[in-house]
Length: 267
Image (cartoon, rainbow, N blue to C red; front, side):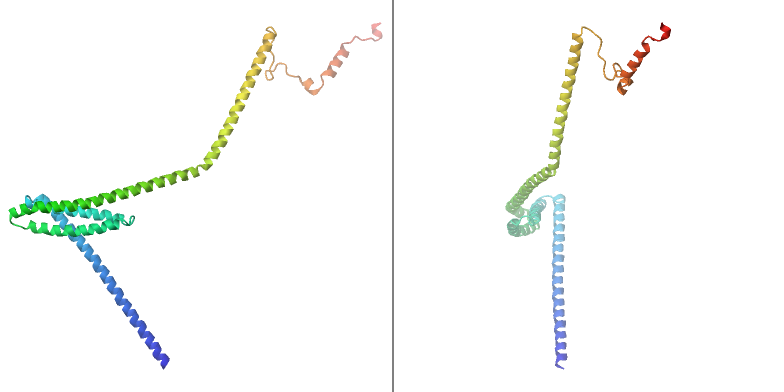
């Protein structure tokens, strides 16, 4: 009975733990979905506001168009700077400090945008003319600060990219030299072979020239005698009898046949 009660208690604990984990997971998932929806909603609202400001700069005239231009320039500068900093934060952690400064700058820009929005609904044109220069000057200061950080971040990323490209180019050149190591050995061997072949050719040419000079000298010393026969012109070649060693016996037989007979008929 006690064992059965312990098993029931363990099952209940396991069920309660599973239920708690399911509830916690559901709450976390709901919060993540809500944050994502809120982020997309804020982005959509901001995109609509930006499009509205662009339309106002083209459709309205006077102070309303001027206020819309200031708001649009301020919003565009901050958005561009945030995109650059967030895009390079994964490669350069130091941009996190710049992103924190941009967040503080964005807070001032939000306050200024609220004042410009209030001034946009102001019916008194004299009030608008008095307040607009001051607000425009503040907007230019915020825009200049944001642009300064954006340009510095771009120059920093460009410099890092150039340095990395230089190192990568050097490594590629070193690897290419290592891959051409076989080509260097073959090139030296072929160069030595070509040198030996050229030396042999020059030696043979000099020998041929020397032989020709000797032949011409012998011909001149004989006083215009017969031209010496070559090896392949068919003149002066050894006969078949000479090659077979039969020249001497045949000559003796011919001499015997030419001798006069000394028989009884001669007397």
